Length: 385
View 1 (cartoon, rainbow, N blue to C red):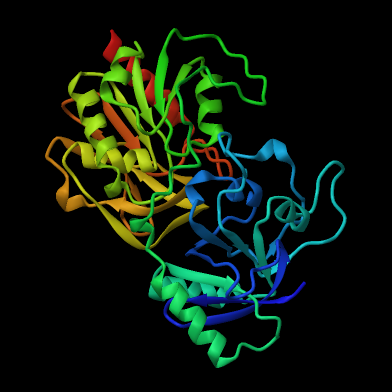
View 2: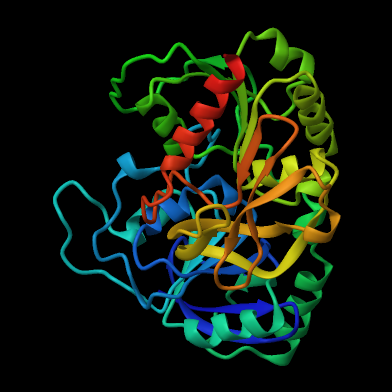
């Protein structure tokens, strides 16, 4: 394990010990990405393989990570061309290297196998507080072959991270989504359920496997579409509803998908969205999204149902939120975040449209919100009737 450095674009530097794939030497390769923190206590493998983290380095706020190892059955990314791990790097306070359950490999080995850089022995509490106070920002990870960072290396690394584009300037969906239409995509799990006779057109912007699992568990057939699908292609498929998946990046960049969504809505097909899908629906109904200071990432975010006043805990992973002032009068706020009052869900009064900003499938996280899928199905059945 070698001394490695994390340098943020505001000039703040953290010294750490590398694990997993060694950090690149400065000047040979460049490892730059937005740095965000995740407040989950467990589920690090699902977090690593969540396509929504594409283009981001993940800081785990829970101090001790890796104590139950890694097993491939937990991987969330199912349409990766090369690497099931989506994030650019994993940053932890303390990595576990002790005994593991049978048939599991260590987190260190798992990262090595997939050539992902890890950092440990780093003050993640200080780093998290810095992000909370100053906002998520790009960072660069590197090593110099020495335990001390000289001024020359510091200035060079800072120039590299400052020149790197923001998340809003990068196409992050390519590489984490399907390239072709897939009818009833197969999963490495046996799922049996009584068919409902309903089929959802699911548009893949970087979908998590567990979303498809939840649909299959409820007897919903799935036709998976690439993110470039047109409204004509969706409507011609004979599906009963459309679901827009989660995914990485800035929804404002995806105006073709927004236009497609608007056409499908106008045709009367029920439309649902999760995470990025929620943000695309926000744009399609005439609203806008805003970049959050540091986003919501973790499995312990409380959400309030504005209709029933019930509060439940959710899994979240997003950096953008619906701009409340931009929403049309036909949009009703379905859920709010109990911590910061941000919008966590919408439904429309004039069309069968519902969406949630959080992840009802969890994985990782609490299962309190899985009933959202039942609501999507009920809305579809009512519209079909």
